[in-house]
Image 1 (cartoon, rainbow, N blue to C red):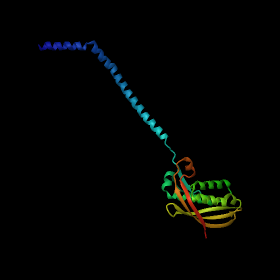
Image 2: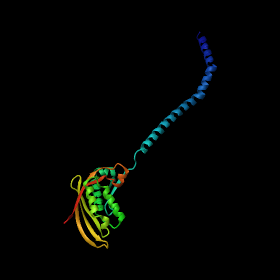
Image 3: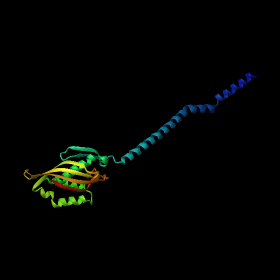
Image 4: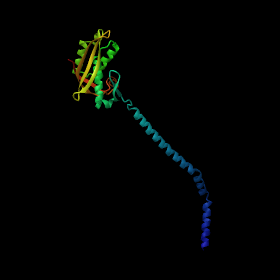
Amino acid sequence: MNQTVLEKRDATKGQIDTSPYLAARREWDERYGSLITRARNWRIAAVLALAVALVATCGLIALSTKAKVVPYVVAIDNLGRVLAAGPADQASRADDRLKRAALFQWMSDLRTVTTDGVAQRKGIDRVYSMIANGSPAQVEIGDFYRNDPPFDRAQKRTVEVDVKAVFPVSDRTYQVEWSEIVRGLSGQIESQDNWKGSVTIAISPPNDERLIRVNPLGIYVTNVSWSKVL
């Protein structure tokens, strides 16, 4: 009886193995199944690559919309020596050396008289670029230039300014000490005097390119006075 059952099973297996439908199915799986799997993997890889490219493109666009230029301030004295340097946005907030260096140059520009008209004009422009609008300093400097115009003085004599020291009196006020040598047009010394002045400032960091160019530190003189040292 067992032998009969085995023979039936073998007969059934033989029918299954020789079934045209199943044979075709196996042939299809072997021949095309791996192709479909590879195609699906390629589609997944393509979608991932597109997503990465999209993220990278968005990142580049975001970076391109941000300002990449960082103003860098180099403060020099009237001899061209570097006194201090640093990014404008940091220096204007905390670096007292840059404030003093700016006042060094400002006072020199204010008191210098030269026969070079272009240099004189640039010096006056630098002076006004550091004066707060509507401040007492604006009135004081305006009166100074009107009462003794440097272009008129330059027709008879020049004034050479040597700033000796700038030191803080308070968090906003600085004392400036300098000497002035007055020369005739032939170069002879007419007088040599020492001066001192008091300068009060306010800080307003620049927020556009025009202000960065004319006053990168954002230092504005609000009050100023000076006198000859006897």
